[in-house]
Amino acid sequence: MKTKIIATNFDNAVERFVEYISVTFDSTFNVISDMIEGVLHGIESLFLFPPFYLIILFFGILAWKTAGKSMALFTVVGFYLCHAMNLWDETMITMALVVTSVIFTLIFAIPLGVVAGSNQKVSDITRVLMDFLQTMPPYVYLIPAIAILGFGASPAIVSTAIVAFAPAVRLTSLGIRQVPTSHVEVGKAFGASPTQALFKIKLPFALPSIMAGVNQSLMLALSMAVIAGIIGAGGLGKEVYRAIRVLEVGKAFDAGISIVILAIILDRISQGAVTLMKKGAN
Amino acid sequence: METAYFSIGSYIATLVDWLNVNYSAPFEMLSAAMEGSVKFLEMLLLFPHAFIIMTIFSLAAWKVAGRGVAGITFFGLLFCFAMNLWKATMLTTALVVISTSAALLVAIPLGIWSATNKTVDNITRPIMDLMQTMPPWVYLIPAVILFSLGRAPAVIATAVFAIPPALRLTNLGIKEVPSDQLEVGKAFGASPSQVVWKIQIPAALPSIMAGVNQCIMMSLSMVVLAGLIGAGGLGGEVVRGLTRMMIGVGVRSGLAIVILAIIFDRVTQGMVTLSKH
Image 1 (cartoon, chains in turn orange, purple):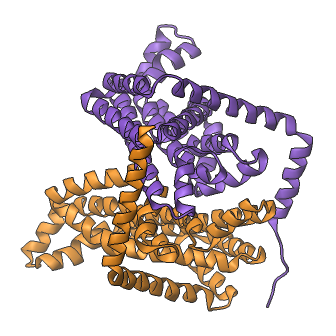
Image 2 (cartoon, chains in turn orange, yellow):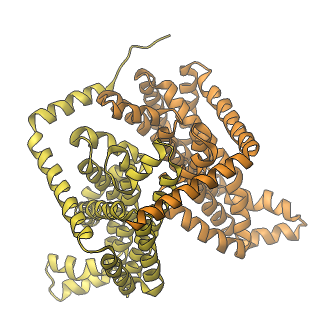
């Protein structure tokens, strides 16, 4: 069959291309990969080094402040359950993966969103790009990341950050657009420079919307960080993958329950933060 | 300090074992029904020559979404064919179609019911919230354990995963039907079922179709993920590429997935626009 030959040629071409890229830019990618892994390990030890009850206490208080008493109770019980199921380290590793990826996403997404919110041309281009990013099934992002960065944590973080990118850009740009022009005018009338107008008027006003973007990014990042378990990212995703393959039913459910607990906690805390900011804005 | 080991999962595992032993018949029936319908559709798609299928799909795309989308469909499918991925592409299409149909079969009636009944709404809303919080992977675990590996658990997990957006958008669409239209219908003596079928559903159609679009996109992403549990198709190819370090295979099938996603998205969005007129 002829199509088989086309396919083989395509595979060879891709492999040669990837090899060329990874050989030529070897040092660059190594630096990037080391940097990403450095940040990840820093955050990971932040979660893993203190005894588990301190972490639970911290998140319990955070949940109380943002989402109320019942959510605080859920956080404490939920995290305690993760610990009791012997999955504390995995839970914290997954959380570190999510936090690291979201940090990298926000570093790029918020400035881009701010520019897109104030410039129509940039906004048109980013909208098309974001539509494209969101059409693709998240899984697909693992392929180029592995091709360039190899297996391990750094391709997982890069692909997770890409998956989580779109909502952060969209909601930042939306927030900036929704700042009433009268506010900006007042600022200008009182002699605010463009940077002052951005940091003291526009960004504070857009904060609830930006936080809603952060919430969406967190949720997408969690689902991707779990999937990234198959390429050796570690954490709960790896545990699910392992348990399913060796048919340890109980363990697979334990890991699944921990993922759901983590998802609920991250979602409600960040949603609580959105509500708090909305109240603050009014 | 070490806390006593406590596993919720082991209780669930016992429950699942019990279900498997005592109620294997219904699970096997459901599994066989899913497997059978996927197999049938797959045969239907693979029996004619690939070019015939490509032409049929492109013509359908032309009808609902215009010339541009028809072009994307034809050349996209041609790419899948040329890349030696025709069988995998058709299997993935069959999986998406069957699981989306199963999801809609549950989601649309429930959406209509929850829009008209406050109690049902109060029950479904938190469940949908929880379902949308859970990462897709989590759905695969119970499916694999109840239905073992293969296509049946993939279809069932995908169908469950894809229910929330369709249900929500159906519910929203029905709720947004202007009440004066309902009043007019009632005033002219329409029975409750006539009100649903002839007023509410037609008026809610754009919103329902938007739900179908979301449902299909979520199905596709889940079906691809289900390559991990042996569902085959393009997802299976990606897994093969990822786990055996065959980057070429991974990229090839990844591109095919992207193309399939774009085709599904544009065609169903065309249907949304059509239903607005």
